[in-house]
Length: 97
Image 1 (cartoon, rainbow, N blue to C red):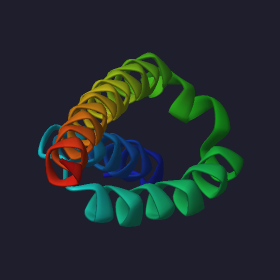
Image 2 (spheres, rainbow, N blue to C red):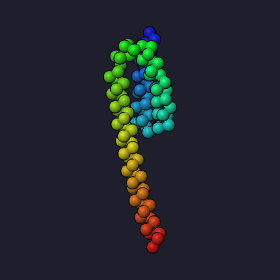
Image 3 (cartoon, helix red, strand yellow):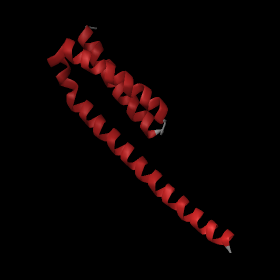
Image 4 (cartoon, rainbow, N blue to C red):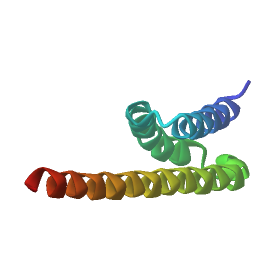
């Protein structure tokens, strides 16, 4: 396997791993893998440039899916926070009387 092929596989594997971690809502692991991704991507682009362009559509699709998963999770957390705040308000009213 050529170095550029290995680079493509490494990038695809990290991209896929980030998706799996987001689906599992394992945010601390996702952050660690994302840092790894951010270190690896620029060097791979510099070394292999055009050869890596072939996987760009897949990486962009994975990035879009990752953004959607993160946004959905943020919305869910915001909803839960809102419900908790309402419940706390109700408890405070009850305790007050």
